[in-house]
Length: 443
Image 1 (tube, rainbow, N blue to C red):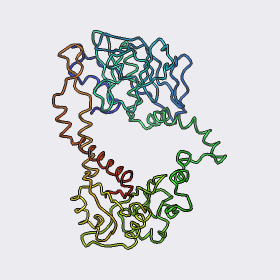
Image 2: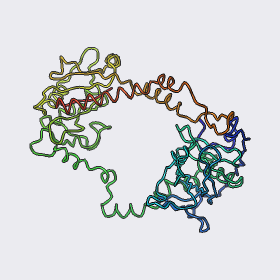
Image 3: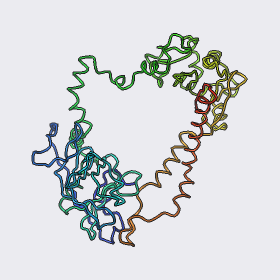
Image 4: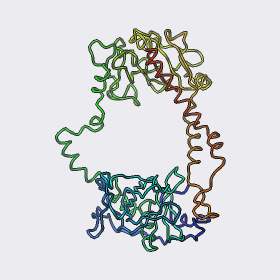
């Protein structure tokens, strides 16, 4: 896969171009040099035209706009417009504003543009999604294309003048490709969207922090409100909120507030955590607001081949089962294949044995581990990468892959997704039809 923001060498790497044209090698201007620490970049020059679509806070143009004809079906249907390059995205707008109420705010109109179903209202391509750019000469003139990750069709295909094409391509490369000079790196960072966005929001954040209104993550998620929604704060609830992880010493990967059965003491919670991999003790994730069925999570128990036991861990699972008077058996969903769980037992971990954990039923879901899933996903995404250009026929941009479906099957990705969906359906049936409580874990 070409690196993000590929340079001029990658622009001329293709063997052909649509229409059988000759590739045009872009001239990349050398990056500017800086002496000392550069000041924050100025705003857009007044002479630069701004797009009709509103820019985000901190979004600034990196180069002056260019007249660009968006190439629709094949290389013959074109729509006149303007190309803008900002520190966040590449924007193409038609010259005439849409007449309907949606206007220029209808972003990411890539599908109609590619298929030629209609004249696009707006094309917006995030810079982080760009893996390569291609420049070639065709019957329609100089064509500038942007290819995205895992998208076999160009996200943007426009006709530009040679000078504008060289300028825009150079500015894009300069912004995306890390410079070698440390001072140039600093300059690139200072004009990035993340820095400008943060600096422009800083006064607002400082005012909110000064007034104690800025609460960080809690401004987005209120755990207490969520617990209230699920009926957990009711004095008659079988559950309670524990503060034992307020300093993240009980479990570093769990939230500060943990919901556990009311009958479980905090000291027993610590002892049960010692018996779980990574100290991920069984805790509540969700409860039916109008019922008693619940979903809890944990990691695997450390039983080993000698079937070690923890009275506190066994009592905790029994307490979770006791919160549900309609179905006293706690369903344990082990997402792993059984053979994987057996192998983990040889390493001192494993799974719940029903002889030790009474009133439970263990089910293995045969979902592969993260390493197998990652390899499968990598193979699957490889199938979605932009294909080699085929210049044998005019307008035929990409060669059809007859083996796509067989390669998709070989990747195993659809099989993994099927297992996850089946597991989800199993849990949904347990809590909605059987009215059972469920504990879900893998390793």
